[in-house]
Length: 89
Image 1 (cartoon, rainbow, N blue to C red):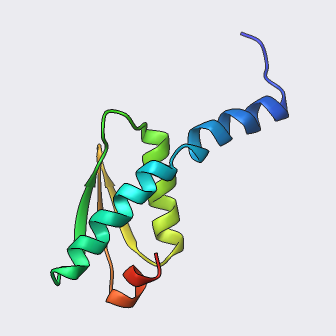
Image 2: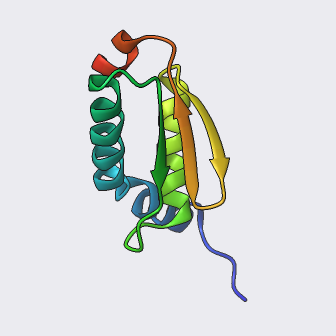
C-alpha cells in the first residue's frame, strides 16, 4: 500500500465532506418541519445514497450550531433547546 500525499488526503476529505451538502439540506428540512409542528427533536436517517462520513460531517455541523446530537448507528438523534436555533440553519 502506498502512502498518499497531503494534497491527495485533502482532496479525498473534500470529496467526502463537500458532497455532504445535499444530506445537510435534507436534514435541515426535517429539523425545520419538526420545529414547525412544535417538536424539539428529530431522528435523521442515513439514506442509501449517503455515506457515514457525510452523516458524521452533518452531525458535527449541527453540534457547532448548538444542537445536541447523538449518533445511533445509521441515525442521528437531534434535539434543540429553542426554535430560534432552527431558524438560524
